Amino acid sequence: MVFVAPCFVLAAATIGGNAAGHNNTENKVSIVMGVADTVPYCRVMHPIVKLLPGRHKRLKSGHPWIFSNEVASSNSDTKIEPGSAVTIVGDNGEVYGTALFNPHSLVAGRVVSATGDTGLDEAFFRDRIGRALVLRDRLFDEPFYRLVHAEADGLPGLIIDRYGDAVVLQLNSAGMDLRRAVIVDALDAILAPEMIVLRNDSQSRVQEGLPQGVEIHRGDEKARIAIRENNTSFQANLAEGQKTGWFYDQRDNRAFVAGLSGGARIADFYTYGGGFAIQALRAGAAHADLVDRSAGALENAAASATENRVAAQCRFLKEDALRAMETMFDDGARYDVVISDPPAFVKSKKDFNRGSRAYRKMARLAARLVSPGGFLFLASCSHHVSPAVFGDLVRKGIRDAGRSGRILRTAGASADHPVHPGLPETAYLKTLTLQLD
Ligand SMILES: C[S@@+](CC[C@H](N)C(=O)[O-])C[C@H]1O[C@@H](n2cnc3c(N)ncnc32)[C@H](O)[C@@H]1O
Image 1: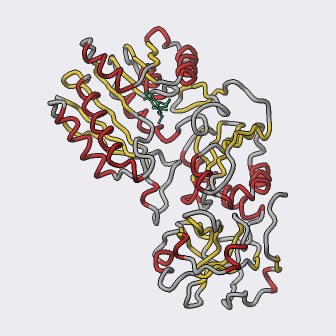
Image 2 (image 1 turned 90 degrees about the vertical axis):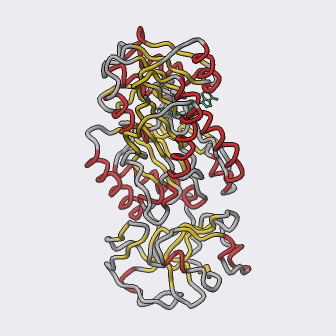
Image 3 (image 1 turned 90 degrees about the horizontal axis):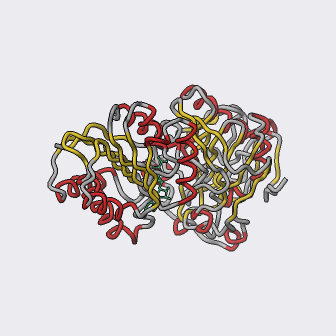
């Protein structure tokens, strides 16, 4: 087991108070981050991290993070191994919960429980992952979804996407990275997956000081795996595809756009695996142009089109999307449905102005391609762009194109990507569907 907690475990029943001087109550229900601890987790004495005066207020209001400049630094804090569980204590001596701590990260603490002595053993992960599974079972008929969405599922820094018998993990914080063995044990107890892929190549790991890499932890590396979404089969590549291999967050939006697409000519920019276009073709669209600059993504999309018997209605274009929009317009191409779902244009705050201009340009170029009465679907997955700002950039871009219309639907990610109530910025996906005159 990789997890070596710098603490000692006490039998829950024997604890009357912990180092922070607060009382423990067996079976106490604590509510943190929208997740209530209803089971008697193993009680553990963690190292204590003290906050600077007044820096407990955000935690008290339900926000689950502690920034590095909020910690009263001391020698003992900096000696705490990155990823350790700690007890967070305010300067008033009050306990604000158990957090995963990384003294080298801007987000130094990620609260996992409102009680200060929650042990992060296999039982803890089995309970949290198990509850996430119960929710997904309620939401979906088939085992293809985001199983764990970090803070909103009470597991900050952990993403688990499920592809039938395969799971893909992203261990995006030092705390989760340190506990990979216990997380895999918990997954085995719940799902016993045949294939486990660790997609530890995210940018968040760099910010946590963690190495990047992709590892097939269990199972044979497969070039492609069959997945299902909205009653449609797709081919995805879990080890080499982007992120965890598939963007489940657009599931509901793909279904909505497919519903508008009967008999339509479609352009799907930034298509990745063809999620929007292929579902639209299956719903009766006449033709789709699928544009992406990634050859691998287009190969998967082509394999999925063949599997769904719509390949003859597809044209695959390996091009820069904005350039393709310009060329298509100049060539007189017009579409009944235009979809544009780019990568994040604003990856960090410093990109805001440049990225915002790119969204406005995308809205302008995409709007020009929509036939009168046709539909435009636009998305942004940039955390740093709020729904209001995105709406404003889209409005301006459509005006720049000399078009008018109406917003039919404003939406975000599907319900397997829940939002932490104290972290509204985790509602990263923003989408607008418009009809243009
Ligand atoms: C957020 S994903 C799109 C997801 C896709 N719409 C879906 O439904 O699964 C972004 C895609 O944009 C592609 N991409 C990134 N930059 C691009 C560019 N300049 N031109 C065309 N495609 C680009 C990536 O290869 C990736 O497939």
